[in-house]
Length: 82
Image (cartoon, one colour):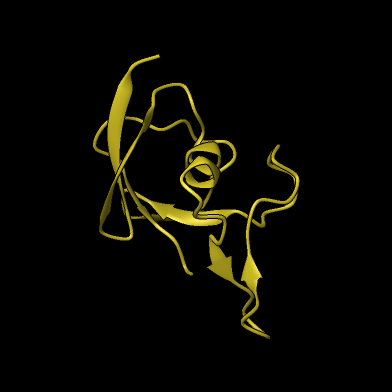
């Protein structure tokens, strides 16, 4: 798999093609993807298969995308709610 570059919260992140956004963020030691609306507690990947909605992030300006279901691509911009 080839190396690609994505942007996460304005930071450049080198990762590998074929990974999901969630996998790339976990591999980069960035497990917090958002904060719970009520308590503000950190949330991250829970089920890893698109069932739970815990890994919601904004991808290329589109909010509420499940990071565990979207494959990274070169130039992608990801915004977490951490």
